[in-house]
Image 1 (spheres, rainbow, N blue to C red):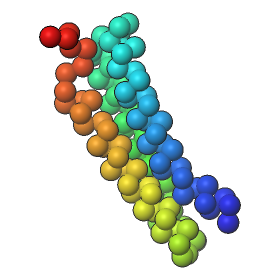
Image 2 (image 1 turned 90 degrees about the vertical axis):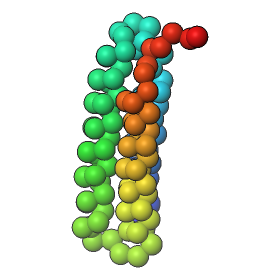
Image 3 (image 1 turned 135 degrees about the vertical axis):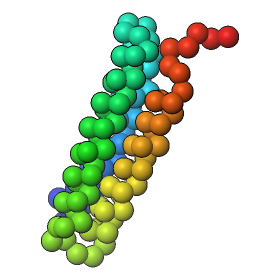
Length: 101
């Protein structure tokens, strides 16, 4: 049961890693690499995290678990997928490395 409980947290943990990478890298990429490199980093990290969470979601959806642990894992992975997209959109749409006015 502990393994299933831990597996249900993989989605939120992947989102937390993507969130940290996207927003912590903005200042470092702007200082050393430039705005285009930050955009590529955000897009790559977000796509990789979304792919990993989608695979996790599908594995948990088709898994042999039943009951609360299965529905919790699927729900958390689905929310993590939405959160990854929600985190990536502002970083991709808004200009990064803008000079303060």
